[in-house]
Image: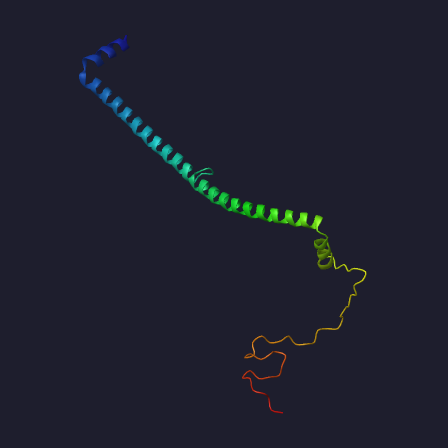
Amino acid sequence: MDRAVNATAAQTQPGRLARRFTVATAAYGQRRRIATVFAVVIAVLLGYHALFGANGVVAYRAKRSEDRVLAQQLEKMKVENGRLKSHVEHLKTDPDAIEYEAHTRLRYARPDQVIVLNNAPNTAAAPNPNPATPNRNSGAPADGTRPAH
């Protein structure tokens, strides 16, 4: 019964009802502001992730430049592979190419060839390509004059 009296008293007093309505409206406004701030924060985080995340725009650009570099390397390797295939085919069919490789890489000689080994150390000074600068091994002074004996 006390409830019924309180309910009728609340309806009869217009100030109390107005206060309740104002509190409910203020709480609703606060919830809207909080929800809006929360939505903005979520949007900023998603935007940051879209730009700088593992699969973001920055990572995509880096992958594209890496793809270009790898494509260039692949083209170079295809050209080198073609050249090497041609060389292998040439070695399979050309006896002169086989003999050349045997002489240069394997150091083979034909039975009619004579091999001369020089085991003496190389003591001859290398020729000086620039006559203005003296040879390090020679006793000549740097000015190009001959030493007096």
